[in-house]
Amino acid sequence: MTSDLDRLRQKIARIDRKWHDGPAAAAAEEQRRWQTRAGRDVALAQSVREAAPGGVEPDAGAAFGPARLSPQGIEELVCGEILQFSGATCFYTSRTYEFHRRHGNAEISALAEMNGAPLGLKSAPARWAFLDTETTGLAGGTGTYCFLVGVGAVEGRDFRVRQFLMRDYAEEPALLDALTQHLANFDVLVTYNGKTFDAPLLETRFLLARRRPAHARLEHLDLLYSARRLFRLRLSSCRLVELESAVLGFEREGDLPGEMIPYFYFDYLRTHNALKLVPILHHNVMDIVTLACLTALVLAAVGDPEAAPLAHPLDLYSLAAWVARAGNHEPARRLYRRALVAGLPEAVDWKARAELAALYKRARDFEQAGAIWTELSTGPAPWRLGALEELAKYHEHRARDYPRALEAARLGLSAAALPEVAAAWQRRVARLERKLAGRAPRISGL
Image 1 (cartoon, rainbow, N blue to C red):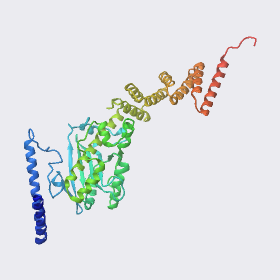
Image 2 (cartoon, rainbow, N blue to C red):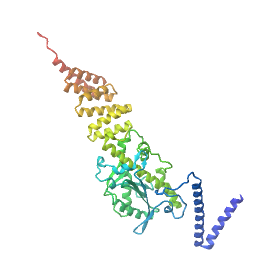
Image 3 (tube, rainbow, N blue to C red):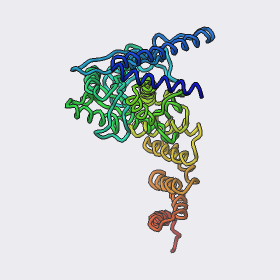
Image 4 (tube, rainbow, N blue to C red):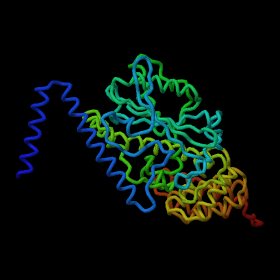
């Protein structure tokens, strides 16, 4: 009770001094309090460093230094600099991932060797900008700001992420000008869901600031669509963080969930506590590195399907279907075989067999196709009817084996559930019966 009264008396005394001595004295008192708290933090950090086994030293190459409570803001917590454009300022920082490092099971050195041709990209990887934004809301519209824009790029054999941060709404013009200057170095924009979210939102911010959108001239690759084609059968969600865990094998520790980022930024604006910005910067870096590594994986899989770094049967099936649609039928057939051997879920297994049989038919390999149609003819109704129809057509028109064609047609007629389908099968049966009757030997004297 006594300590509570003492703290209350001290607080009242500070208020009295503030009003009695004026703003200068209040500012001095506030500075003294900050220095006291900073001194305690430094002392605490030093004691932790000395107590840890072997000592704890910060990584000299990391963008994020030791957290120190300071009234100056984010530049006291994160290594960076203040950029100035047209009288406005914004904060800039960068982080480099050296070529020998890994991100989960992905190698950073592989980013410099990417070939964009499978997805229609002609520029070298060094001319690609991997962009991700952090915003004040997820709904978009004129009231949503991009307060942080991160751009990753291949530099030599390394990968470097540059981040442009507006510490207040007044810094948006400087952020947009800095981004315009930086994106002038690139030909391709790579995003994740950027065509729906990041790019339109950035365009809105540029236009409201009476500036030409810096990304408008860039060729845009939204990796979300390619990722869905490869992984949506296996994963219930194709969110970037889900792919990071399930595909790259990288688990974030202590990461700030994306949906919490606007709240942390608003809290920073209200309190000017720059510690709220540090996890946002880290989250943005992780998103960009993951985006780059997934891009390299997708390009490697589509560019050389048979050497694709995929092991899950559903991923192999998805890649086979993608490659088949692109017209690369021979590697697609081998991928289908790999997926079937690896073991697909029953529903997907029947579908894969039907698609593989269609590829063999297209290649005029009716022996392989016929073997698969025979397997499918004993499967579920949708695949059974299709296989029986293919067998009936093959035996009637190519093998000229009317008895086997008629057998397949009768099985199809018995399996048909809809009247119009049954009628088509009935016509086929009648035609084959006439052909067989025409082949029957005539009896002399009749």
